Length: 478
Ligand code: NAD
Image 1 (cartoon, rainbow, N blue to C red):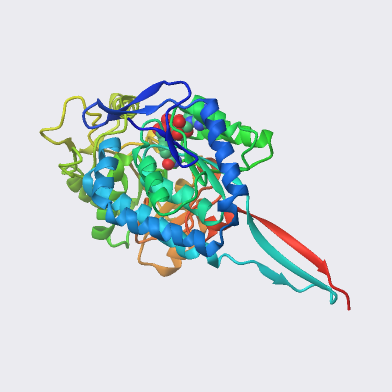
Image 2 (image 1 turned 120 degrees about the horizontal axis):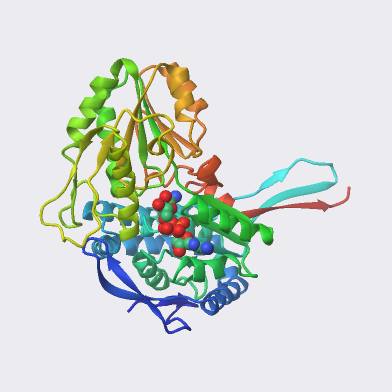
């Protein structure tokens, strides 16, 4: 049975209660996690504070970096067993799970190498003054994570916090927390001092609520739904804490009539089937210039019909969704759209031989989707793609920006001027030109605008997010 990781020890919940860990490919439980309480959170925050004030807080940036680099090496050594655990916990195809583990290792490598390269500044000021600007860790950082990429999210959220010397308390999703726990064991083995990293499992409204409302945290970062993100931000605001939110999106591909359509079609399908569409940066809207709409959409549809949802071992385009509620939610979008007469351009299939209790949904392509339809506006978080025609560049930009979200976008055109104009006009945090990068790009600053959240993760910039800036003004005399 899995346990919390607090102060370097594996411990049960103070409640003694547990929650089942369900395999999404079968709907059957395969383990149990502790159902965390406010008392467990309190113990984790105390341990983090003690680490910050103790051995962890005294470590040099280089020593912190070396621990993260050792973690990276250990993760790569155990890639296969970690990938199997990730696939069992989330249902994702084995090749995607293997890639996720490599990405988790890459975060440790990137931030391990960067830990002692975040330097401050010396500012020119009055002649008899010296002014330096230094970056200092906030102290104890709280991390609330979702279920879609548990290993990657650990790397993306917790690792830069540790690299900058913060002590972290993580509440992973109740639906997928096995690899974050396994990574704690690896962190301990790599020499991370007790208390620098703590994980409390449990439900959002219990352990998650207790963490975000704890009086001794200094920073909150959350990835998940806009609804819960708003609750988390309110809790942070009550204590005037910094809060980074990553809340998903409705990301568009803009395909112009001069695009390399072969290349675009391949990326368009991968961007919505990867992780069964349960990706904040899934490319869920396919905007196509009217002059090539029929031709390009037919090309995508022909390939889309061959997509398959299967077990992790079958390693098809996607796996099952994470739980019954998500399966029903996504199927609900498909059923309502069909019932309202929206044309299905193509539908993939659930592969033969899957367990009947698995949470599968067939990838589905709809089009043309009316601009006000829920499939054009709402995040489905499943393998559902909405095709929509646009007239010209101005119409494409208006349509792309016409949702409440703004996370990423892709522009498909060979026209260099248009590439830049459209990229600059997108209201979002990342734009790809003739490419699409859902999920990857450890080096690339990532985050949203509007309802997709605020603050930036990934890249060197994330180190600055986890630090407060102090300006030291010294009068040194003539
Ligand atoms: P969620 O927002 O409910 O949960 C995300 C995390 O927040 C989990 O760890 C959960 O335990 C925790 N949480 C829930 N309520 C909380 C509370 N009151 N206080 C503190 N923490 C709390 O997301 P979900 O139920 O996992 O998924 C629902 C929808 O969210 C999805 O359909 C999708 O649209 C969106 N989502 C987005 C992302 C993303 O990457 N942006 C990831 C997962 C889900």
